Amino acid sequence: MSFEQFRFLIPGFRDIVEILIVAYVMYRVLLFLAGTRALQILVGLVVLVLVYFGALLLKFGMITSLLSFVFAYGTFAAVVVFQPELRHALSRLGRSRVMKFLGQTATEGVIGGIVEAVERLSRSATGAIIVVEAEVSLNDYLESGKEMHARVSSDLLTTIFTPYSPLHDGAVMIRGDNIIAAGCVLPLTQFPVEDKSLGTRHRAALGLSEETDAIVIVVSEETSKVSIAIRGLLHRGVTPQQLHEVLAGQTWPSIDTASAADQADATPITS
Image (cartoon, rainbow, N blue to C red; front, side, top):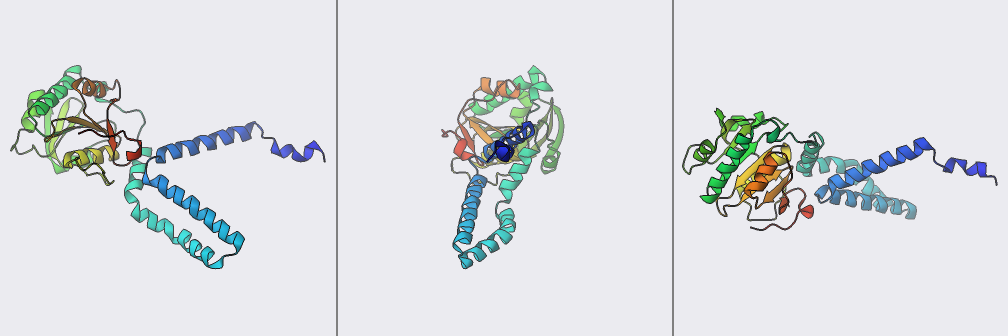
């Protein structure tokens, strides 16, 4: 038996590159699915496939037939049942990894105005939700509110969220230096939220951050705490300094996190 017979087992340069690419893609897919129900689905499918091949080897005809039926029609059922997860995944895949933060298009004065307004609202325990547009356009959500063309200022933002004012219940949309709409209705997250203390504003902030790359700032009416929703993660207990850094694109907030889609990766939430 010569060595030449086993030469095909020795990988070439192209083989090594291809293996590394496939391994990296699989790693990114698993990292993408980590902590979501999609990963649980993947594990379940692997188990079913192993059972199917085991049934084939043992010649269990009825089990093989049932699993063949499941594989044939289960895909359509999964698309319907797990539609929120699929939409969230496609949204994340189509989103640029590098966010276009407010600090790249707005002045320091605008950022300071937002931070000052949030501080005032927090001190007075006034509920508010402020959306800062990034790369993904928010035009689809403007029709639900009142269109505006006003320069961002702390006084105007505070006035909009004054209790019993016509626009205080909705969200304010900010694009660059301007407030483009107020009183907007945001989509609620489609994922189950285990923390029952999260109100409608927080669920709406999560919902919009799952569908766009916007920065969504929430002021809790009950606790007066400030939260930021980014990429489907809710960062709670945000300080003015942290808010300023996030808006300026300098850093991510190193604080408690809650995710409707990735709760397994989130740290415990504190009210």
